[in-house]
Image (tube, rainbow, N blue to C red; front, side, top):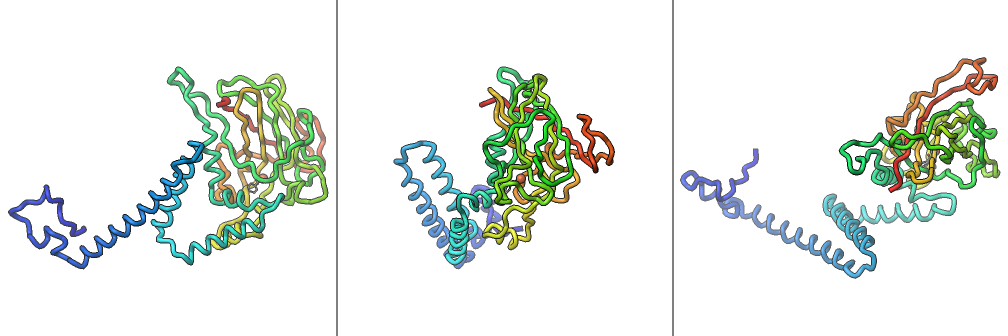
Length: 335
Ligand code: BEZ
Ligand code: FE
């Protein structure tokens, strides 16, 4: 219980203790502190207002809105945490190191956005899975959830036919991936462009080998019934680049740099919202601590191991064990 006096209009004058009724008389020291706090808060608010007003002439209304919101949130962060000048200097040093390590191949700021969940929040805001049907109270079928694109997508991947080999020599256990592409009304989407890319069994993408190889990435198109299928490799977990400041942040916070085992998809079709997503392996130990918060339960799939000697769905004879999984993709309408 606090000993805050009741508001004046509720106080019973008969019962009131005059010393308790007036906090200034009750505790003059507390009253002075309260006034000092109010003066300080007013100074801090005035500074925020001054910065907000400085954006009044911004040409683009949207830029102004973003700068104002950023200012409000940054100032609130400084005020809420009572950020010290030494702490702010550490923050500036961290951002400086992010800039120093960033080049055409390494983007530490995107990595920072990823590990802070800002990338995933931006994706979540921009990829609503459920929308009411216009002119109706019905909800359309949920579209497939989106997740991070990551730094390893490369334009210009080779095309493979349906049932073709995406692995392209990448090491790993063969994995048959099949499904359909539909819209949120359940109509098949023929001719959808399906880009897939993944790491090999060492947890490395082709571009990380630095020898111009193209492997474990390709694109294919869905057939008349929206169906697709391909051979890839069973995904394995791998760490995000953690030899820079973002890695230091992960270490300082005792967080793992590992990404849960996944296979990337980017699916596009005329009139529909392009979907960038992954599917994840249900048994992966990192599902609950993916370093970039990319895991969505709806994207976790059974990658069912087939005993050696089992022929593939396309009749292919394989030497060793292989896996198969299914992934039906539902594309949201273009907005
Ligand atoms: C990836 O899945 O390829 C990835 C995503 C975010 C950061 C690093 C890698
Ligand atoms: Fe990845």
